[in-house]
Image (cartoon, rainbow, N blue to C red):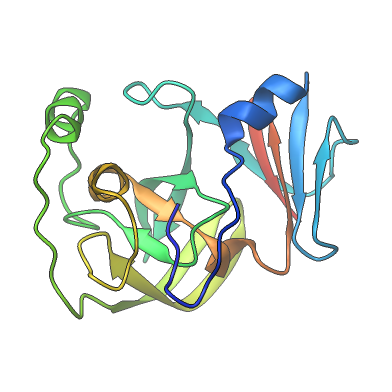
Length: 177
């Protein structure tokens, strides 16, 4: 989870916990400010949920940045598009990710803001999206969070607000309306 200094956090309810509370899906209704368990399937754009081979209990989706296929984690607590190290470049293998995630020290830097012309998630096109490197000091995250987002992109509120999203574990689909 990535939180800015102006936000307040009372606690974190993670997807792993919510998944244990339901048998089919978790729906995040950003429009009406609700979290629904085992809701009706929302008919809308969808893409496959991919179990993360390194971080057990996490799920990834494929999406496109300026036409280039990337992997990302839906992070309902993230206020940014936190892009991975070498975005649009060479991706880390599973072995490289595992090794990197076990490393403890992370150096941060400033002003890593970037504007991405087009980002497409499950058929929905976003334009001129601001992203921050997971190394940026303005992204408030634990060392673990920074390491994760250096290997996999974090897809936060710029993509989720004004939408209803659903993590369908029964059918292994991510839906967005």
